[in-house]
Image 1: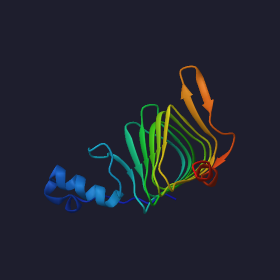
Image 2: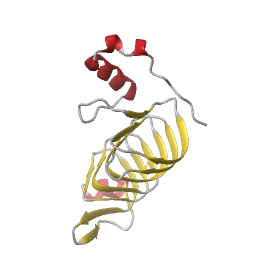
Image 3: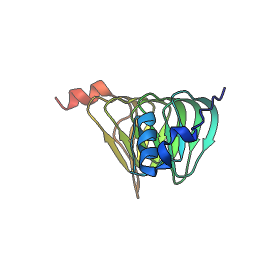
Length: 161
């Protein structure tokens, strides 16, 4: 079931791009590359299926299926619940993700994130407090470096104590 939330011109304060960006950032609860996000699924949206996108996509709602983009930047917002295999160029995770995540470049996992699934990328950044259960693989030009066959947040914290 797909619910749409239309942004009315009255929502975009005086059609001022700076005001519009501030308004959308308040709705999204996340900011990214300091430009207006054109692809957005709000908290009120639940979507199932295959989603292919270009550019930037911010998800704050619920999504189940697969997310794919060869050049895309994906933001999983704090209120998002994603059950999907994900393949993108770059991803930033604030919310909950269940499924395997593959990024051509970077995966950034923030403190509030909860991830169940394997992650692979050239660079993986994980903030303290993030909850992760799965395998981490760092890609290099020569192949993968497998950092763990199975890792959980508790094991990470214990190894740094």
